[in-house]
Image (cartoon, rainbow, N blue to C red; front, side, top):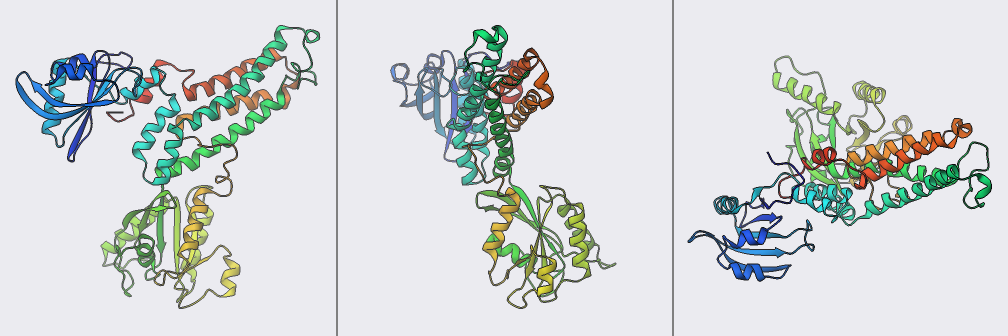
Length: 473
């Protein structure tokens, strides 16, 4: 069984269910092996890097498919190795036949993420850029794509290295202080160590801690743009839930009638909320189901399940009927069980074109959003409030010094590890401790940041990480 870490020639179908398919190859001796199954071997072998050659893939004397081969010469390639991308006709038969010919020529099947793994090992990109490759592939909105591209371009790598270098300067000052007597060092080298037991450049370490906390907080925002959120529209029958669902989608997906209980089951659709991928669910009206209507009972049960797992609950109140005891009981129950950052409740007074909320209701529920789903008024404010709740603004919208944010859980966990260790080193109780107990803590924080970019890494960790990639990347 093959493992990551060699430079043997590899091949995989990277794309192709349409007019064209793409087969990616790379590794030691790629072009020589491919020349053996190509109709124009000399043209391929003499082809400069970053150019394209036309011809046929052959099985001995039989033509398999007419192709274009994009040639890449080391080190100016994605992986830093010699490589070639074969553009062939789409579908399954042509690509399968070409892959079989490549296997016969000596190519091995690529492992998941192996091309990007080789790019990392050959110094073409750090681990944050590698992880952004899969972010880019799975991006659901243009905003998510743009954020992944910034990380792919190295914005996060630069941020991490800048912070790590600051912390290395602190560590160097501490180690210098340990190695030489205080009277042999000048004032610049001992800066920040005015108090007994304190360490040099303490203020710089505290500044780094603040930057790391801001960086760690960015993960929630970036995760939201990557994975999105579930918003469930709930409320009593005939409150206007389906009308709101259709209005947010800008199309008629849910059936709307004046008969209460029209929606028996839930329906879901995806929208982009200013760049945030949002799964929007329209649910059955909340009420006591009729004894002879098991379909309605199941629909209401499913509605409650969805509400329990929602990131955002849009509770629609029928403005023409006003708020009753059932509405108030639901609102009170949601707010009692609500945890910070999940299951957030947004109250909506619908049908404002028929009846505005009384002053007493506005006073009791000051966070009420007033709208008319059928008339289209108030929807812009609703979308703004939905994003604000999901983003937990203003905290998460403040970029501080961060240009890209953390795009992977692994990055977040290592950042939090660096924060914990640095907090321990900076704890007031340690002011009286010798520096040789603080220096290892600073080193541990430096190494945690090095793991984010891959400057500090192990083979096991890398194999686990890249095995989660898709084939062809």
